[in-house]
Length: 109
Length: 115
Image (cartoon, rainbow over all chains, first blue to last red):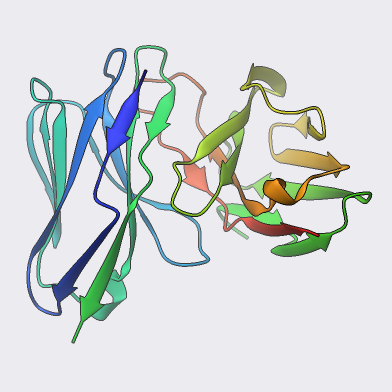
């Protein structure tokens, strides 16, 4: 079966750096997405990786290693507003999105 | 109004009621989706529509009935639901349904409680 694994919950301190990992086993690979979802709100698109390496967007970066079935989302200079759930999703060979259960990130002052 | 909107935002219904969820996208996209989101579980894809035709139905019980009258509107008709159907129902849209770089854009969801 297809599977996406990410930690259920993480805690970090305001101003620090946090890395949220995502590992996947899917039938084929056509890209990996990260979404942010604040409580009670819509998931919003953060990043897309299809080739190995690091994609940087301001304070957020996303890394992909296709050979290892692994990605991470790196958040720098954490702010209180970064408290949210972070969803990892992989597009498989049929272009279906396979979703992880999300990582709840708690930021403490 | 921009993006993807959903109404109502909250809905409480009994098991014998009939209700409908509405989704509207203002992005000019051709594909629309219904997802179910339960606590601590991955998003579950329910239905996919591309150019108003249903292209995916992931073994969803018949008590959920989708309708897509045009590429901007999507409905989910609900009847005789069960308490385990209580969840957040998310609508999403994307430019196409199978594009290599398609990104899905989500609405805020309808929080459904079935008593």
